[in-house]
Length: 306
Image (cartoon, rainbow, N blue to C red; front, side):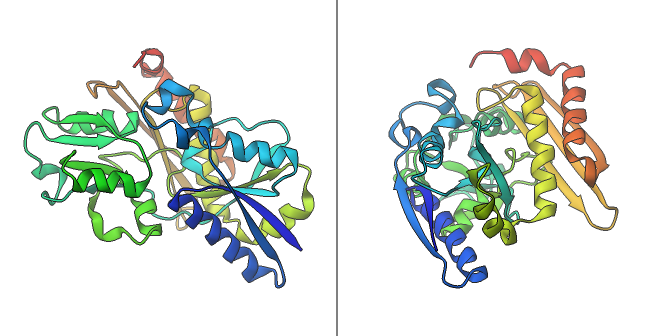
């Protein structure tokens, strides 16, 4: 049997695609997974922040079109890049076990964020990171930075930035963890929704493919993802506002702890809510934390143009 997997062609996307292909072959002897490499609009439009040119959907539009047209059977995504709403006819039935969800501080000269001098130039493409960095330190300059991981590391090495902030999971997957000076604790830098999680998307009616994918699903990770995405969906937030959400599953207490954050882009206002809820009611927990954030005054922050 041949399964066609749609993927972006960046080094990290190809690593993710090959990882899923390898896992599938472990469970299904004789299965052939063929990669369909595609270039998305997000890969082509690197001179502006995503929130100004169409949002996270630019990472997945061409892959989803390949699924809907039948050119591909599955697509692999970093879930932090997935829009909150999926096109009709598509679903994400599989969330792989979460890897490192934290943000990494990467620098050549400086060993930690605290050691950066006043006025240091820090690169990130994320409003979520920008607002939290400025909340931690008002004396740094945060500047726009996009491109694949290697491109960003090259710009750092060339001295365009004093430091850059990247997802730790991406660096670890690419064998570049030695660049990490430290990771930010979630209480200091709340991660992006579903950061560190790979999801596999397919056609909703394709039960045969969903059965093949089932062994890759990690239920505890799925509960965390459902809670985090429910929060973000309730707030109506994509990449146009500094929003973060991070759930942790505790086997001992059989409960989910969900932290949510909404901030102003300049980091002067940061709203944080934490609640604990039942594993079986992950989405309800996400809605509860989102409603608490709205009650605390999040709506004007979500509406502020940036």
